[in-house]
Length: 320
View (cartoon, rainbow, N blue to C red):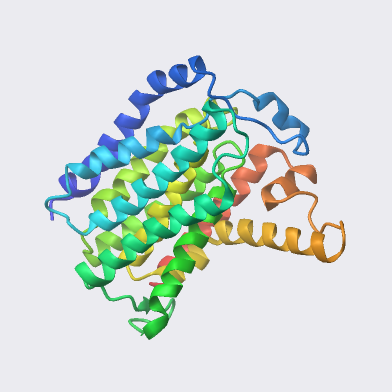
């Protein structure tokens, strides 16, 4: 293994592409008036973000895709990860385009988005299970080399994990730098594991790290660009696909705990609201907004969630 070629170069190349795209993409989005709309019931501090260019996920997606193409011939195992990342990213792009360019606030209808996600996930599942004939058994954290195989339930579980992870990543993208900071740590964790296991996917995990670091230069508070669904859905696809290629979906509960909590907070909030006829458990969901409504500054929420993810990634490494 050539460490420079396989790991360092992908990070630097992807970082460079992401950074260089910033001064080009952001003014272009601003010129087209592709700006973020802000929820009226959200934290008051977010109102000043109205009009901030969104769809900046194009920077992340382009950097990851371009960098990966240099390695795809020698590292065929990155193909399914690249496919799911790009596939979900295109779904997010379509949703963003309808919302901010065509000015239809709802974007894709829920059933349309779900149908497209199921289609892309289905292609991924077929390729992994039938073309690569990949072992879908899952490594059990803290149990050495023990794996669990769910047999005929492997494919249904795969759909649940991938769609769930993508939804969690999407919900996490609600504060300046939150989804970027959390996911760059998750990508770093997967990179360490990929290198240690010689899995053959390290170029794309390294590319994701570089792309996110570059994007963070423009996405940290106060953000000059948001990733939009283009970025958040792409990152969800990347995280879920990488976990499966490493046989580590169970580890997502650890390293991706922030994603899990974000999803659960929305499910709990909506369910309780309906059952109690209008009462709420959280001041606002997803849960990062609850902390804001409780008096935390946006930067504190991002810092705490990022630190928690960093610690959990270290815990997960112990579990490997």
